[in-house]
Image 1 (tube, rainbow, N blue to C red):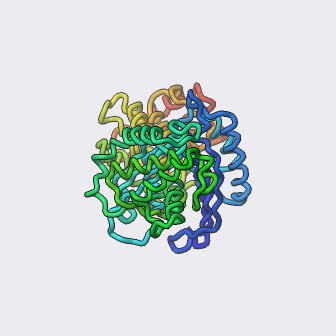
Image 2 (spheres, one colour):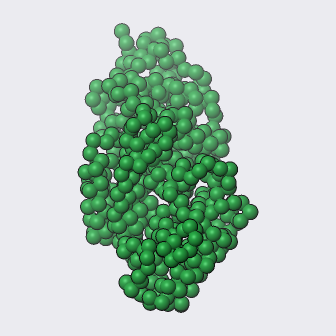
Image 3 (cartoon, rainbow, N blue to C red):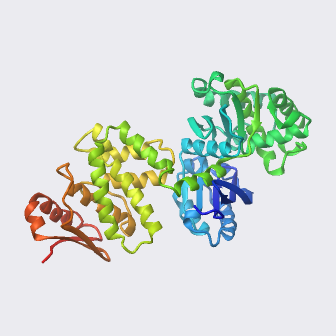
Length: 497
């Protein structure tokens, strides 16, 4: 990526939406602009876990303002991610469809572990380099992420459904601070975080860092209250809780360093932070400058280079874990990419490169389900991808990859896809044809086979001598035309003169 390139990260958090714009210079990203709006989508989930209309409209209005600042940015320069609230919301598709139109860029709903990985990348890139083993904690509106890592390598990542907005709504619903409310909230938070006891023991980390909203707010309050260097200690947490109890209600809290938008959720956030300190035996925690949005910016840098894209590493690990036939995957990938180049001849080099990369990934794992069942490997493979914790991938990306795997063989009616998506259809067809041509599990002779797209019709052209030499492959190619008959697409086989 050229020096001077602008990059943008949009973080659709449960409490706040954030826009970070940075400039790439020699592998680093320096801040150009930062915007934050308190949207509180996290308290807009009703009892059925649907976002209320008001919560959706607050989100859309904020994204419209962000969109104005992102005018002129290319898709490769922007990534928008959504976290716990939209992971939970049953009607998230309704919100996301309009949000995409308003923002002008797609929005990825990322898994909890992927959120944790990106948080760690953001924190690590803004810390001085060291060999310290780090515990990184991020308390968001509806989830808390815990990460163990060293340098830029996140080793243990988990997300827990406990956060400042959720706990404030549940245990301080009227904003009233009492000893009983704090005790109940603390016990409940410890119950959720109790699973972390085995993985995040004090002997596995040297220094604790806190990222983003709640921890940054607490650090600011303690610094203003005279505690040294903004470091968070148990003594400071006890002092802060006593100040909240003395105020009795959230709207009466007056503390230097506490911003107005943080006041309604400080009770819940403090309780979760105390639970982390108690369970993980944290003596002190240092607030970190990096956060999820910074991790997204550095992830954009990695995605721009195939050799550093963590998604490629994830694919290799999945293929190895499920004992995929590497030689067959390689020949299917090579054949599929050759065909896709013919189908997408009009694409720009950058666009074609992205489409080829994702097709290559699908080919590498198209037999991932074979370890479970040979006959239904496509179904099991799709299920694995839809439910895997796959570093680097968003949930929509994994689902799209899973659809390619599901559709690489068999009937197409099982696919719940938009057949108007020309890129996906071309990727799917290229993969299916490659699987056919490689059915004998040896390098296919494809110099006699070409594909020619004409709108929604694709003609597979073969030389007569090729069809005579490979009659089984020619038969399967004819059958492929039948498989597409119930779709809006027409696939036919023609013999070259």
